Length: 284
Image (cartoon, rainbow, N blue to C red):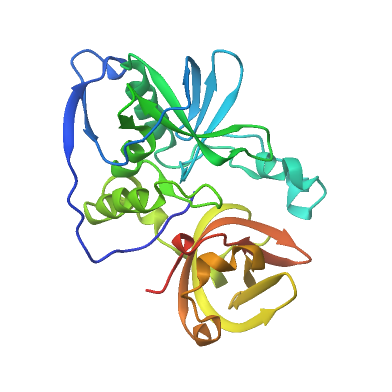
């Protein structure tokens, strides 16, 4: 995971302190009450926590937390993926790091601690309820009032990734992240989470990154707009997502520096990233 840049304004947040027994005897967590839900769609029971953004329920279903991305735990690597010799359906799994990313264990442990003290765990589904891997997409709540995504973001143990049509609470999630950035909390205190220059990306790079580069040209097709950056990197904006970019003047971006976040992949010898929402772009 690689993350988004600096912000210049302070967000006031309301925090409460509650005991969390899963973190050890007498330990406590500071929790924000922001990003509350107007409804809970399903009460569930937890079986396990894989990482800071993925759960397994007692009935075997997997839940991917909407709106955030947490540092990756160790995953299987496969060198053939770098040559696009695997189906896209599974390529993200085998691209992932063989070692935990910085603060991956802290993110998972925080989530375990938060959920372990819950009297109830509830899910609020998004407009799109499943991802292409068959996982449930949901906002997770402790005792109907504590938004789990908001806690991870406020602690700097996850970052915002907004993927339409699941836009509920994305503005609130950005507020939690901005607060963490200003406080240099969690990943925001680490140099390895600074944006990577596009010209410094490794060959056949893949996975979730925050990158920065100069827009050299704009390409437009029937289906997409491409922001072509130095370093042979392209940002793709699907025309179906244009309504979210109505305030962007793409042509005026030529020569400007951008910071983008998302999943890098390889296609025809070029490094690409799909950008689904303006939350994933910044002009520093």
